[in-house]
Image (tube, rainbow, N blue to C red; front, top):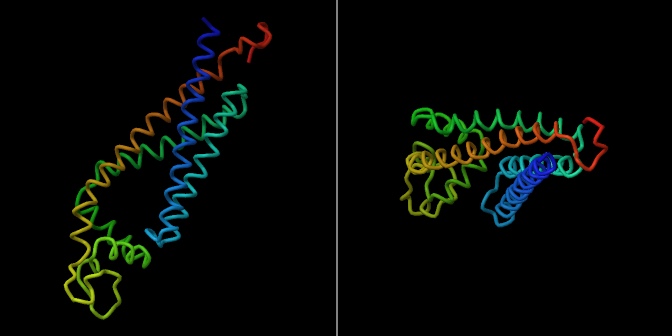
Length: 203
């Protein structure tokens, strides 16, 4: 029974970390693809996504190695880091799911004013100019700008931002639940005796 429980915990922890590795590689690949094909010109956005992907990759790799070798130190630090990530991600998911339209508009305007690259990306993809009003004295990447038929971007962004935030909140909530599951599995697995080791040795 102890051997089966130990093996089950190890396999579950390995499977969870393999999932995290696949997600991290997907994040890095999508960010690099978006930058390569010019879909996102903001280096901060791309760098941030790649940074999160690399961080998740190394955390998952540490968890995978710790699970395979039953390494006490790696499993301890993995458990602590995963719990901290859970707190951050659960907070983000709660904020995304509870934010109202006025707060959305304020945050969008702050983000819009802080990044010219983001402005160009949004104007080009949504075919709009300016945030709350069209300024004909500045250049705009939208196809409608030469014809002076553009509308402000705020209304178009607001049409989609609620759905996007709800989707992001649900994804973050799902992964935060898998992370607390990972913390529980790690704690349980770390305190089990390895049946391959000396039966009289306590870990």
